[in-house]
Length: 251
Image 1 (cartoon, one colour):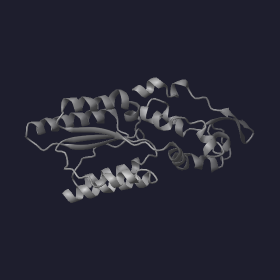
Image 2 (cartoon, rainbow, N blue to C red):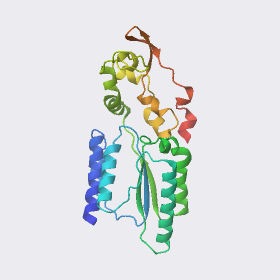
Image 3 (cartoon, rainbow, N blue to C red):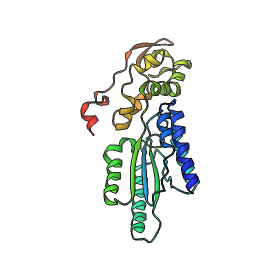
């Protein structure tokens, strides 16, 4: 299995380099020659931020599971009971490994906070991460780690815009549409720059999980209807609690 581990590690690093437009290529080349044995006991929690290469990393996780080396037991939008059940099963398995009665568990967990539940993202800092830190303190011989990827803001914003927002700007409102977020430039902005002007600190807001992350995919401008035409009123008000403040960065 040593060859497969080395190959998958190199593949992961090089795929991430591609996902980040080559920004990680130099470090990937350096790190791709580092080989280490699989840990006997491990839990790795990955905090997935939008458009930072996370889907590529999920694909790599799936490959590790297919090779039989790791478990990947939760969907990324898991709910609190599912998380609690995983913790219970993991600690039972670790206890067996510590008592030399069974092999140690190796578990991968992704926190995305999307379908079907936003729970893991909204409670990442007050529940999920503290739970992981507690496990790490309770089982120092088990390899318990966390990670997240961040991307240069300009390509990250452009990738998010092209994937989620651009189609909203170019769609045509249906007859009789009177909603507050009609397709078109009135509500969604004329281009990437105008859209981005109303969406601040995307990666940090999503990482914190409590900074109105769903608004990142919402229309940035308020509209009123004049007959069949949506007319822009001005920027949509964003609640103050959505702002990232210096104390947030100390969490």
